[in-house]
Image (cartoon, rainbow over all chains, first blue to last red; front, side, top):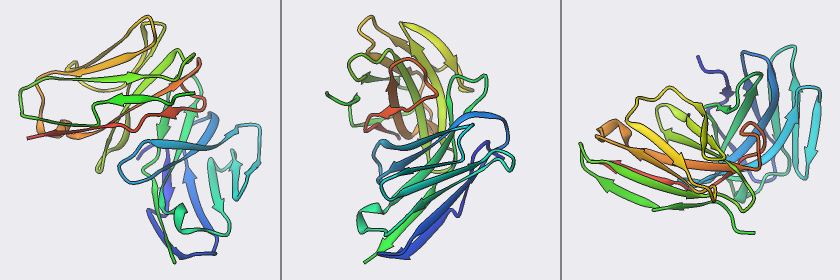
Length: 111
Length: 113
């Protein structure tokens, strides 16, 4: 299986609800990042959390990192229709000069 | 500041042909990475260039190649196209380190018939 695995693969919620996506990885990392992709477009960076950090906030986004469990979660609060997109976690593996992306979570916000 | 620009946006080719994709990074960014995105394999790292040198390479066959020019613009080339090369090709730039925050272009959608 891949370095970054995301769960769930798809998530559908009502506008105003919170959305939580999870990412698990296998090897030691320098940082973990979350990106958003609207259909067929490029990825947009959302947030970066370093291996010595446990939690980070940016607007309606909250990211946690548990290096002992090799997992991260992305929480989007008070979801909006515009949050409908695919969300990817990406890990910066120690010793590797590249990002390894997970398969993504497809988030749908229903009005 | 202009973002990452990829051209062309769409390409249709036939098997056996070759194709060249272009990427202009954000001004001041010296690292350019290329990724292939398909529904089945997700985002796969192709290679990364820094100051005209390939610094990192993914697990793709030699048909996939790239280069970077002195102005940091980058091109990737795929020769002898196969049906399985149909994908969204994304380039991303960053100032120095390819494992920090990446700025992506909108991608080139390649269809091989």
